[in-house]
Image 1 (cartoon, each protein chain N blue to C red):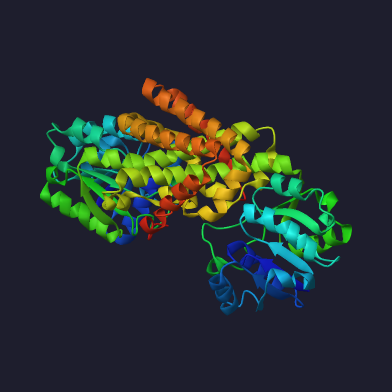
Image 2 (image 1 turned 120 degrees about the horizontal axis):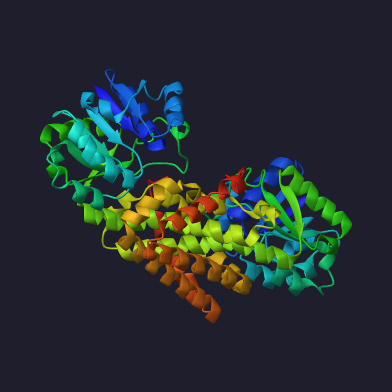
Length: 282
Length: 282
């Protein structure tokens, strides 16, 4: 099974590692804009060979793990070049623009829209790790548009990698993922920004930061190259989540200003409900 | 050494565990409003004996680990009752109101204002753990107001528990801790609230939440009983941090609305600087 991984960073590299471990017959070919990343991926043993877009006609499976705007641009070209039995799936954090841009492509049946909810705040081939996807949710959109045999091949990969599959339409995916993923990245980036701005001349202050701050601001380490296109693709939904988040913050601030601390207690108590909701996510 | 721990929850209980391990001669007495907590602490071996405020005259060391408003109320009474050689320290997340309320107390010299930057999102005696304080920062305010011998005793405890000591005036402490701790609790609580409100009828959505969301919303599990008085005590500073945080969020939202994604990229790239700052905090 010839697997072409386009984008050999954290996400693509972790797929490469796990697929190689799960399929004896897998040969992993890496494609990346960055020659440096390709060399790293090769020397780390993440890929078996370097390759280029011109060779994708040999592929049995192609995974695109690059920013979502680059994915939208490259997928039509890839779908042109592949052989008829090839499965192509992406792993991007937005699905609506991608699915609609491919809806009339003659080889739409070779493509599966996937979003594995997995990652870390790090990036690049050196950040790729084994078992990143084990126990994680993988959201599949418009599964009915993918050829049945290729659905099966995709499920075989996802299952061997230990993922839980959920099916969803692209519009719902983008709407909900804005709340449970995109918003938390912005809240974290803006928290980091606020504190850095305030404390830029007082480096000792970060000695005062504990594990709580580190946890809340962790996503502010994420890659701008990956996240800028996500916010662009999911603009309307992200704006909606931000409006609601900002309104809640303003209301909380007003409660503090008014000294209504029994209401503040209740707000926090109600939100403690997140304990039950998050059970099982670490 | 008779150590009285007032409030045998996560923070007080973890002090009890570590002091018992670090000082052979330590006897730990627990005081708590909740009989249930006291029983738990006793059965978990966190305290050696249950006690009451009326017995604190026997104490060599008293640690108050209760909400900051309760600390302000109880400390004058405790300082009345203690023997002349007793060290009393608190561990609260605000210091200005506490220090000013005790500034004219005849036994001010027996008190040390401390804030160990340590904790988890859990609470109660069952949440107490060994080595919670190892490698953590402990901020001491107005150290010069504490009797020299009692400063020494406190440092012996903090050193054996593995803490790094920083000295700071109470006003600066409260101002900076609003940024690196109090704000991240509010950002996390409001993130949790926003997502719960939106998704309350769609429980499956939380299957879409990954480790990034879990990390950002972790502090929303924190105890309202502990955090409400902190926001009350540090009202002005917390309002200031919230205003700056909200302004940054609004600006980010406007950049998305205007489609200025090169600026958005730059905002995130600049904030990535948090990587360097957070090195060493886990």
